[in-house]
Length: 347
Ligand SMILES: [Zn+2]
Image (cartoon, rainbow, N blue to C red; front, side, top):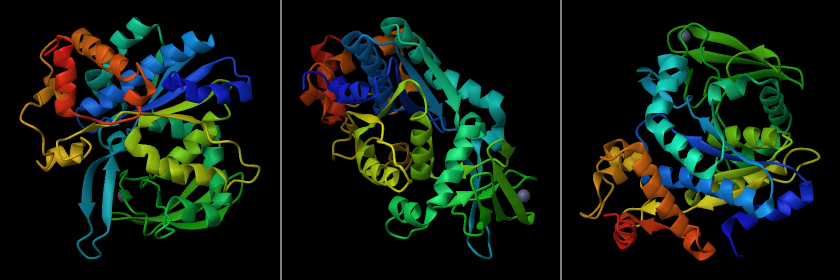
């Protein structure tokens, strides 16, 4: 291996694709930490490297997870959890504002530096597309096998549909029942805390909002990406590698299964104890960070320079990580990042 982007070369050759599309995620439920910024910067640099090394146009497609829970309620009688998503609670205008605030400056600066174009699409927009809904219906046709692959401990993969009157849904889909499904439509019943039982119908050309949990959503999205003329490349933090083992097996559950997409895993940023930086650990105050960790590594909105300076620092840091595959295929503690930036005359 000369360069970590060479992972995608065999896929490119097998498919004879003339373009590459890299897929990465953006979280809107809180400010990004350094791990998120490293993954996104790596996506730009990998796209640039794919374009330059393979001589094909490369673009970046970000998916914004506006289906993340915004608020939660618990039924006092049964303990069932109900959630309402960012989309249903705050609406598309506020979500666009959040994406711009957390990522706009960084993405624009990296796009200018690499010449890689990018788009941002919300989950809400994705699930409306007929081929997404057709792939969801296809997943139900293989459900007996697929649900045990995606949830090996229980076989329970929640599928939830927001109540048509208030937008709330059952987080774990306990009350969701599949009545009938074929390639053209699926009918379910579901339960709302405030409005009782309701019916939900999914068709390729319309019907209800489809709420899927992480692995199921990624299986549907990756099968959908495979239909595109551009070669799909999935870019994720290395902590996602375990989930991908299940996703790769999920691909085999579909009749006439296609090859899973090319995947590139980016370095994870770790606290002193070796745990990955995560929003929940930081919110609980359990992030266990070394005292030399600057606040902006936990919360990018606390960076004191301009967005261009933030992008430029990340560009240099991730270029260093990408300089050799063995530097890219590893994790970095926040202290080690401080050391690398200092060596580079940055801190
Ligand atoms: Zn309701």
